[in-house]
Length: 188
Image (tube, rainbow, N blue to C red; front, side, top):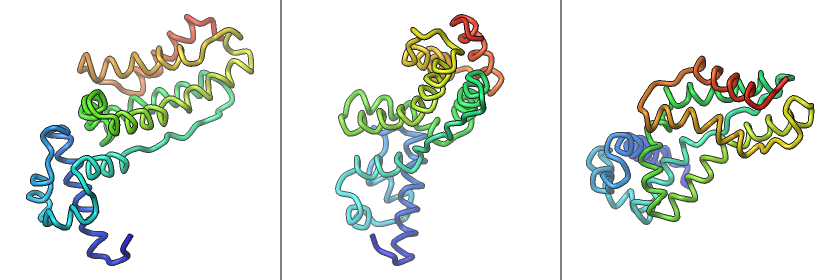
């Protein structure tokens, strides 16, 4: 990649505009023409960096994928409250949350987007799974607990409320979900 500051600025502008378009128009409504028009960067420059519209979009989405810290706060309850509460805050305020419906739609139609979606999902679920596995090892959950099932219950409630029901989520909501799920699983 070039170290020319103009190239860096152009790439950054293209990524920024692509993210804005994805958030407002979705994948289907985002085109290289619309990226060029809104960014003020020539289509030829865009194609110099990326071969297809899909590559530009995937590069933009990649800039939003972050892995939350995997806390080990000494108890399963504290770890899950931090992780699920953080997920709620991210869904309420992060840039990737605005892109998620568009990414989910594209993932159903395109294997490249499906791979990005899987990678994104893993960044959110693996820290929770590790916390649950530690909780099982420490005896805070029954030994026969399926961590994958608990990940689905915890994160599923949050994603359902935000993306399907269209209701807000916040840290307090995430913490309530954690308490209810742990109580149902007989956590100490």
